[in-house]
Image (cartoon, rainbow, N blue to C red):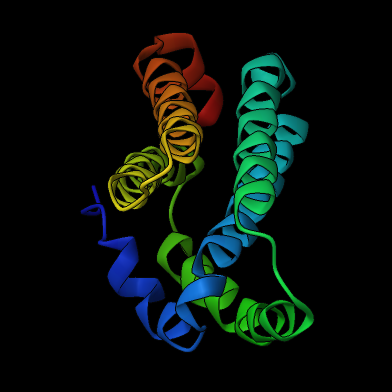
Length: 162
């Protein structure tokens, strides 16, 4: 089994290229990419689709909450757009050559790390409403991680995933 990488380190060069004010928006971009990954798995494994689509919906909700809290101007949107392909390739490289079950295990780790990132961001907020929204994002991340853990622990799912 592959170790779960430190995704902050994997994505660090791309995050560092974005002004600090745009980093929550970049995380929202990454959440939407994760939603796409969940939808692809749901299409590939119909018996698991309901739970995987719920994970995709949580990722979209996280992105929407972050975008609402931290609106982006045109310059920040362009910075995120410029870093998106490289970040996507770096993230995909971590998953390359792994079975779907291993990919899901790594995704669960990424969700937990994402939850920690949203909590760290929440701790820096003076506004209670913003802290609450970011804590909700962390909880949504962890719900997806827990779902993946459940899928991977189920012998029938493990057999389906190969």
